[in-house]
Every structure is written in structure tokens, then in C-alpha cells.
Length: 266
Image (cartoon, rainbow, N blue to C red; front, side):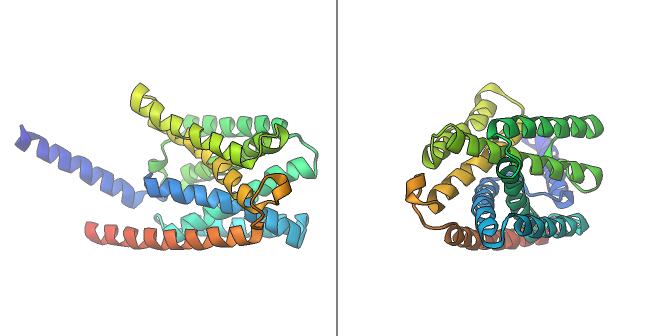
């Protein structure tokens, strides 16, 4: 039996390795989720810091240009490059936060309304993606139309997560720390649902992906905002800087790991 299954197992491993080489997004591991949460926290505090330092309009304009540059670099890449990919995620986080905040502050849209609007937008992206490509699995993202749809979905998840986090922390008055603890508990549900009920891994991935945004943002806000707002009053600038340093170190480690893996594949 072992001799019969070994070639099949080897073929599966080779298929996974080949898919990893072709994919333009990282494999979903524990490190992926940690870095993703760090980027959401950095996006939240960096957005707030830039809006106060530069003013809302220059901040949005600058973030928009940097986002376009980051997405252009990601589109030009022929494979997954950790530094390029995570730079794009960081800028999506910053700009996505600004999009939700501008809708609330400048246009007066309630967070409850923007939550519904961004949820509908995300659902439409998923519907179009699945209709055109037949799958929402991220490991199949290797460029072209599928990559465009992937980044549209990522942008929508950041905007939705921002609105949800601000809805619980500000509109409902639960505060940043309690909201962060709530989302920390909720983000465990997709893994449990997949493990014990056999729920689709694609569904549980995107479920968790949306929740990383309010989870990271609430804890980052709690660290940065003033004590009268329920925070530690460390400042959004220092919190952003610390998170940026941690992200750079993590991405450097991911880059070294990716390089070793590709050398091993020949």
C-alpha cells in the first residue's frame, strides 16, 4: 500500500509546489495572518496620523498615488514577491481606512450605512469573481483578470472592516479594547467552523480575512488614542512606526524563506 500511494503523494506535493511558484499571493499560514493583522493596525493609525498631519485631502491624494504605485508594481511582478505584495497590502489598508473615514467624516455617512454599503460591494465583487472564474480560491491568483478581482475584493474587505470596527467602537460605544477582544473571539470561529463542520475553506478564509481588519485596527487605535477616548495615549505616529518596523522585519524573514523555498525547487 505504501509503495502504491507514494507516487500519488509525491504528485500532490509537486502540484502544490508548482502552484506556489505560479501564484502571486502568499500561502495562507500562521505567519500570513500575523502580518495581515499587523498591516491592518498600521493602516488605521497611519491613516489617522497622515490626515491630521497633512490634512484630509492631501492625505487621501498621497495615499491614492502610493496605492496605485504599489498595485502597479504588484501587477508587474511575475510571481509572489513578499516585499511587493505586502507593500500593496499596507497601502490598501491605509487608503481603505481613509475611504471609510472620508465617507463618515466628510460626507456624513453613518458607519451602519457604510457597513452595509461596503458589504454589498464586497458581495458583488465575489459574485462577479465567481461567475467569471468559477472559484474564489486565492491560491489560484496568478495574474490577469483574477488578480484584478482579488485586489478589488481585498480593497472592499478593508473598507468593510474599517466601517465595522468604527461601528462597534464609536457608534455603539463599546470602545476600542472591548471591540478588539470581540473580534479576536470572532476570528476564531471560521477555523472552528472549518474544522468541526466542514465549512468551505474558501468561505472561512474570506470570513477571517474581513475580521482581521477591525481586529488589528481596534487594538492599534486602543494603543494610539488618548485616555479620554479609552486608549493608552501612545500616539498614532509612534504606534505606526513600531508596527512598520515589525512588518519590515517580518517581510524580510518571509523574503528569505521564499528565496530558500524556490532554491529548493530548483
